[in-house]
Image 1 (tube, rainbow, N blue to C red):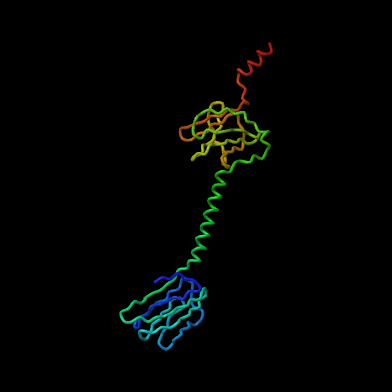
Image 2 (image 1 turned 45 degrees about the vertical axis):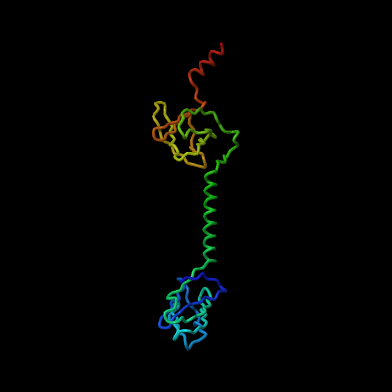
Length: 231
């Protein structure tokens, strides 16, 4: 038999002569005072501190029992059933108030975890400089899922604003021979940040690729156009 514990309750224990009823306290709990029986002549109690045993000497009698532990006080009404009648061989307790506290604490922790996860997932980059000082002149080619929404630099770092995708691409810098060099990046919010600037970048993931080119690059036709305009 398992009782829900409340501090002001009196628990009825059905016992039987010739049988012991086991009172089992929770782990780490034990009686700190001598058990108080109302009738010490016709009732026996033994054991302790966590496991106690009560037994009547004959049927049809009743008495009270008080147990004071290091955690709680228990009040019992002991009843000796008739031979063949119902009795409890073992009784224990659960503690609804403490369960509520544990559940509330778990709920608070879960809500805090969810809130922090949402904060991190929705976190946007707060640029350290005035956004008006950024250089935004980048052309983006490619239709991969990770194609940046925006690319800009502050003169020392390049920022790639990536859509909400499961896997982030690697970032490479191509040389004049189109050989790719992997560069170190870090993730902050929905930005991939490279601690360098370059006129060209390539973003790759598996067989998908996005190329990025700065408008700082001067093509031969740009020079030719300006030269012709002088005549």
